[in-house]
Length: 417
Ligand code: UD1
Image 1 (cartoon, rainbow, N blue to C red):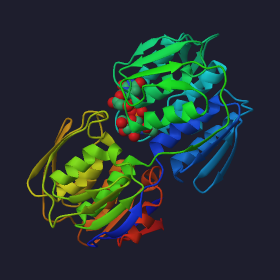
Image 2 (image 1 turned 180 degrees about the vertical axis):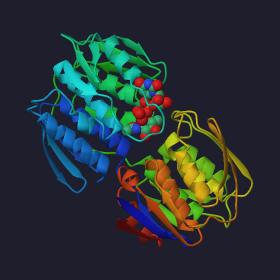
Image 3 (image 1 turned 120 degrees about the horizontal axis):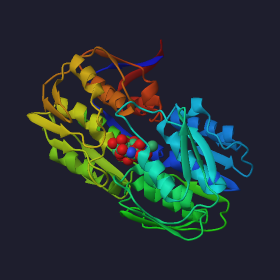
């Protein structure tokens, strides 16, 4: 078990940059399985989740070389069509291998994926999508076996714009004969990155970023090099870290279009910003103002930023209301913020936060990835020392978060218990 020790009260100042996107890297790494050739990926964040994807790729028979943020995957010789259960349990994105293996081999066996406990997180939309493509889906003792002679292109109407289901259907359809259409597809920027990657590999996909995606099947794919997009949630986390400490930072390598809903909220709560092409300069006010947040699928306010901005609102003036519309159980971290003095009332999917002038350092536990980051932000500004335990959750998704914060003037140390 590792922890962060944070001495609160330092204003963040200076320049930092955003790493490659976790949520774009994971499906793209899975998508490399479609290719009988070499995939070179750049700007892949060096985090636990991408390491787990490498383990899965190796377990399938791929050869993988990693050097800092570059990963080279040789998937010419896949020998295993079953994703090992112990690796499935490590993370939610393991399920995206199902679409990729199906797309290439028309058969796959896997089990229910693990990941952060932020709600029930079913995969019914993924499986319904596979069935619509003519794939037989059989479940037995927790194992899911999918198989078909031929994947049949069709029109799939998603009941909800699920990011993972959209990705899985895209991957399963890349090598079919004909056109598959996904209606009510997720519109997240990571879906566009997946489309761009697949098209660079020889696929013919259009529409990503809108709610209708068309996949024209192709017969062959080719060697590909691809640079992963910047992580919009890490960008938001670093901006909120500056905002909560009353700081002033210059954030580089950011795609400002991807974080538009957050930038609007940061302006609304009192931050002054200069927004350039790939850069945001943020100057926080002495005290932030409260606001209301409703999480929605993209281009709405992202659920992954909910916990992060919540810690800012705990110290803002006035009362803020958050409505979490995507995941049913995404307020666990708030119990930990309350231990630090936050005044929060939760009823169902609504959290009412009464801004207080001070939070107090104490021992808290990360309950999930983004909730953990929220506690780190609270620790940066709390009076005294905060110990955030269980930071394994945070290390799953943030590359060098402590180092980046330290370079901006925070007092934060990682310790091994
Ligand atoms: C992805 C992101 C995650 C983000 C989420 C929503 C990755 C690796 N993870 O997760 O960080 O919080 O999008 O933006 O990209 N649902 C069903 N049935 C399904 C699938 C989903 O009911 O088969 C529900 C989920 O329980 C949830 C909602 O749909 O309530 C959104 O889930 P989804 O968009 O699929 O999220 P993920 O792809 O798991």
